[in-house]
Image (cartoon, rainbow, N blue to C red; front, top):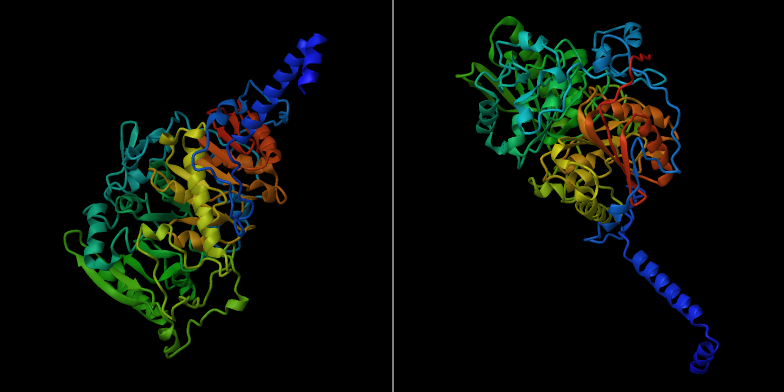
Length: 602
């Protein structure tokens, strides 16, 4: 080697040596640089997530400085702008258009409206591709927690409830704002006193420890659920889109979890045994109607040992009409083995309530004099509640691994990361669940928070479009926001696990529109949703739905393959969204205020 080097010097090949050493240094630098890149965060299948996510607890965020930034003026050569000719939706309801609830042609063709069929889903085919116009004077929403008590009137310009409920303190118009004083039909001393009175009536409720997940039926403007947030209770408030104009829209604009739904002829989009408590304050549901099917639907989704709080005039008034309803309720609740644990009257408010409890063992079912309603045959019963007709039978009670008595989840907040009771029975299920939880904790802390172009301080209403075990929601549980965990009907059914963890969610098919008003969410999130979805429906239709749901200034956060991100980015940029790409697997889109000018579609 020494002789060879001497010959090189003698032959004056110094430039060759210099070039050789420069090349060697460059190759060494590239190898070191590649070895320090941040890890790829992938979960390919929620039923069998990779046990080794290759997560570095403290990855370098240097990679994010050189991410692809695709604005309306700067385009990467790999992205070709599709020629979309966007138009605004037309009609008097266009500003608040909900495709599957505002299909007037289908509603007019209904043979019956007796069981609220006209308030159920009737989705147009194909899904519309028009864009929702903005209300005149729309502005960025009032931030949480101020929004719980007041919102911009121009964002939800519906005065009907102000006049209709003026004596009950639901909502008051004050200048440019709609103000929510915390009143309600049954909250005559205010919703805070009402909530405290329930716990005093039955101390074992223990808001935020024993009782964590609640369904509020016929919720009005959702003040009950809004004020329970102070107690670490998450409430799914729901009501139909009916003559109580925009009540769910008010709730979501306030930053309170809510959805549009009705107890009609079809099951609610929740799993069996989901809720710790169900609440109804003058919710106008005839529980004994249609052979008692509405109450049997509550029985289906109420957790064994859970409570039904019913505050309504039949509980405490003696007139003939109310007593007829009460007697029917007594007969029905006895038939389904619910027991009355408390019945009380609040003198200062002049209202009363009764608290029922669902059994935890099947002994009462077995000892009934009549097998009516019968137990459901699980072999002939659909697994999903999506578009399924209401049962006229009782769902058999689940049992725990230690006996025939149902075991209540751990107290909150331990419940969040404890082994869910309805986790798969596969041998490695618990290990998979724990790894999934760790994966999302690391991804959110190391990448999502601070590593992406998202202003989390402006985010209140969040939707996880394919929630899996609820790991994303769990990882951001300490932030001042809430997550609607959506489980697509075409994927693994993990919604029971989500409720076992003390979170909320719904089933949905993303080839159809979601049951919410336009402009109701601040952030939409998905992780490897689009590969399966685009095999069944048009990606452009899904993007139009996301544009409908998301508020101006809101964010879309997608983890997917580059093939899917390329397609998605092209459509988003045609809508004048700003788009950024990170690590060749994350897309962040931000919706603006752009709408097509003077173009009206279908």
